[in-house]
Length: 508
Image (tube, rainbow, N blue to C red):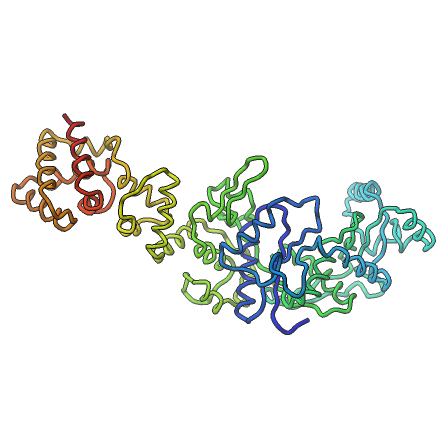
């Protein structure tokens, strides 16, 4: 193994990438970049029955969108490829056979029916069936069968799997497998309680366990950073490394991401149930189902990165907002929590609002322009000015439309509750005078309009509400929006005149 830090993110292309997987990718990326190492993407597709078309591209697109690209991987070949396990399958069998030769693995010919019988028999006796040292000799394998019988079965083409011999009775019942996890500290497992896992399946493909260890070794992976769900696999992986005579990488197991309630692991179905995305980008199934993604819901990549970084990691300070560069400098596996991290959709929205305020207006203008095109709006308004007015109360680009659609579309109706309060007998007359004063203005700046109209109101002791409320309803249709004269300045004299005239006609 190289002394240089090399980490990998190794998802299976079985569907969309859950945000838990994205966090694993992010923590691997941060760890590698902080130490000047490499971040590798490996696609673990040994289980072809679960392969989903499009999932691989989805993974790559997600990493690119979040600005955490991999250094080596599919279509970015390094010196240790190929990076799809299905393209490496020819190399796995030799190591399974090597383990058999050294007495660390064996052939197992048990049929599915036979194993089902044993499971049922154990259940009826109140026990749990485990394929291990305790019952190897009672089952159909190369340990219990004569060599001639084993050779005959293999020659005849009988189906078999290759199992790892986890425990030898002569090791003693107290024998433990121990390791120093970079997050959890010392962890240990009693060997006698562990089962003999399948390393090689009857379909000629390795299981995750064998392929994972072989690939990590030959790709010179120095640190394995993965989810807590893989912690029970550690003893098998350690023993595989030892049995093959290879150096063992350092392990770190990340905490689970919990539901917003704090009870239970966040699942792929929770998003639809609770109204927030659990996928980085939108996923469309062949059946026509659509699963929401953070990108399509309008979240910025910076938001998602910041949110995920604090799911289980504590910087040790009060700081909550981190750029990717700041995260790279601050990240430390020692500050990753052991316990589950509760997912907080509201906190994610808080991050989104923050990043909206820091976003370059030009970038927001570009995004908003695209949204207007999607809505079929032929825009001739100064978008940057509109964004400046709406930005403070916005978290998403879609908020610009929800808060400021009146800039592009004249009101088709007037808020009923506001109208009852604003529309009085003299309103048409006052609006007519307001219109006359506005049309006289050669300088249609908000400052000049404010001075002109408010001066007239004050001078004639009309009462601001008698003019300003109807004027806002004329321009906006309801009592919302920024300063009414700033709205008028952006709309322009012609459009303002048209809208006021429409309200006067409505009141007549």
